[in-house]
Length: 129
Image (cartoon, one colour):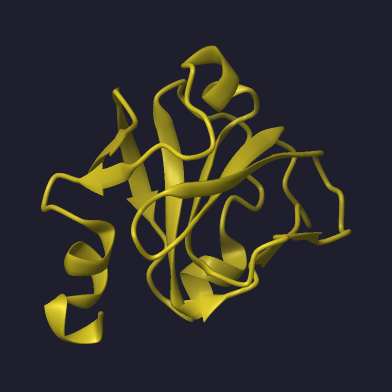
């Protein structure tokens, strides 16, 4: 799926099921510069991600229900310590190659949209807002 991350366009794989979200980027050995994995979480929450069995260095944006980046974190390969969001208001997570946000001047406070509109409309429909 195509996402617009601030002014940048990115193609992402979707982790929609609990199994896809559990596996995430495990065992991946490469990721294109403008590729990533997008996780719509089942509810707004304090996000917690780790790097079990993941050899790739990644960065992740923790995103609120409005599609606004609240936090950006760098993850260390194979680190099994969870990276927990400071905010309890996270609904989406975008994993990218480590340093992608910095290289593309994408910062906290920027909006993310899909090719279908807002993230909530795209993944949960207007009724779930």
